[in-house]
Image (cartoon, rainbow, N blue to C red; front, side):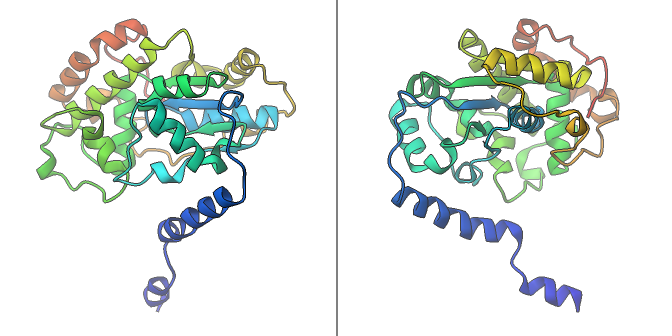
Length: 284
């Protein structure tokens, strides 16, 4: 009986897929266009599963700011925002429901970092980075894929927005297996940060985990955010599902071949960000 009833109730994903486009379209019809030259949102960028959601939510809570933690139009499997100012400006106007918020967190904006900085000259962008071994482990945990390199045709890829992330093909990345693809994705994202590092506020996930309150307070000060709320009760809130292997040592989760791939593909970015080849711990 419960299976029958659950079959009659639309899933949250289906409801969101139906409801949100209508909401965004209606909002666009009844609100004026944004003046992008004066718009100054805080943009939380970075690869998926870097702790960006927790950092964005705590930062917004500290300043009592309005936040949109996801832009639903960019969550679809067939959606990719090109790194072109005209395309980004048009997307922001179409999605101005989200960009009216004080804080906008959306990892899929990251590949268009250069265009975002051009179109939104007064934005306050934050880039969140995490050691590639733990970042890739967390992504694989999220979609329940193994830590040894396998061809894509041998994997059961999720039928969702995670598939283009796992293959990284929308970024122009070619790879024969999912570990190489994710390692090259990390390197691609890191290269974007390094290219624009003078305009981006860097937050290392490892520093955040070591002292969450200090990291958020320091970031808020750099962004000109006034403290309006005590966020200490929120510091241990899990804003994303925890991975099943979050405490598993990397050498136990990944095969030696996978670790060698990650270290080889990410070597340059790791050196620039002072990351050792093997992470010191297995933080969630």
